[in-house]
Length: 59
Image 1 (tube, rainbow, N blue to C red):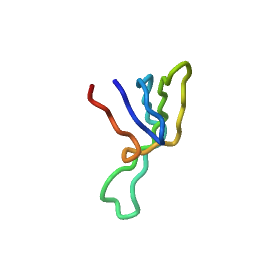
Image 2 (cartoon, rainbow, N blue to C red):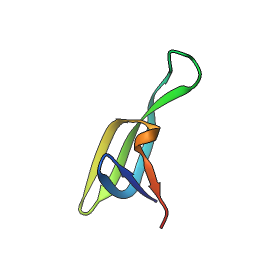
Image 3 (cartoon, helix red, strand yellow):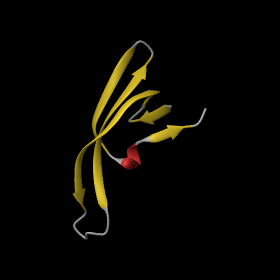
């Protein structure tokens, strides 16, 4: 599966939740992830990454 995050685009290797919290209003949970993406001849790890930063790309 291809993903795009913080200007990087490539194949998803791993997406793991690392932190879970609640907004001050308590309305919803916020989850921080560690994201690993395979790009060209390397790998990029981004953390903490939030839902709104991850874009899944249909092929």
